Image 1: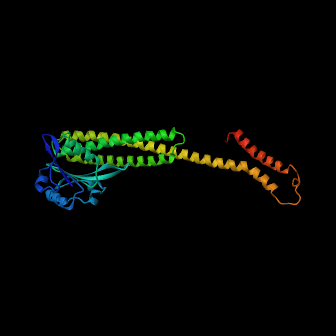
Image 2: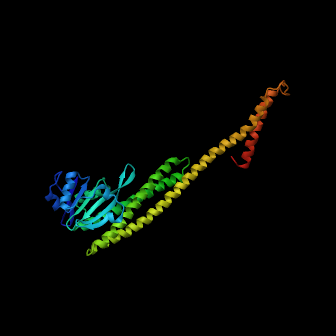
Image 3: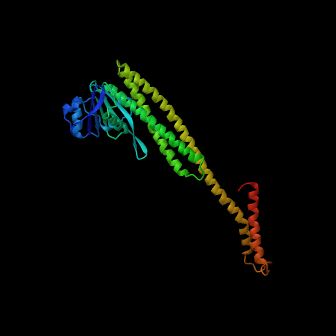
Length: 317
């Protein structure tokens, strides 16, 4: 699907077009957003760029030379974006091709940053003068959304911390599962931030003569560095809570084993007494004794209560 946007009086606005826009419509747009483009749409964009569009495998390459480069089509930046789905986060690579007269973005996944940017464009809330400023605005919004997501992760960690460290009879297995999801999300955000650092460094080297955009990119870089430090703090907090949770689980398991061990010791002497009086010898002194049965029961009770009293006095119970 291709969406077209144009810059009108310093504001980016969505352009109404058919499901399959023609080459003239595409050529007049300042921003072309290709979401899961079909084969005819890919051919249309290839005709516009005079080069073949990058395939999925090419977009996902991790080498710096394959993600940021310049060719006859323009400046290529393959940037990682965060995509939340069913309580988890995944990363989606967006191929951005910047030309003097237009910006082309090619992606396969549905990304919240692009939905928000389209919504703001429909309301006339995205100001830009050229495609370069639009790309910088896109990166700026991306970093702001990462900051919001990190704040949400920190809030959820506070809840898990209260659950693990303060609540009694907490479901610790659920806490471990939640910590694992938060650690995964934090790692995905850190990966996106590292990729954004590389993108900004590349753009700063190739966007000469645009002081306003360069200054904005440097501000974004400072924000990214701050967020990177915050992800490190969150990693440390997650690891602390994970270790604490596992420690509490071990304590609970040790308490259960301790209970079984003490129960075994308490019932060992009565078992010994019962075994002694359960032997089938002909000559047993208490065999014909009228009080033999009460004596055996009393002896088992005393022999069981004695170790329990001893453990209680020692503070082992």
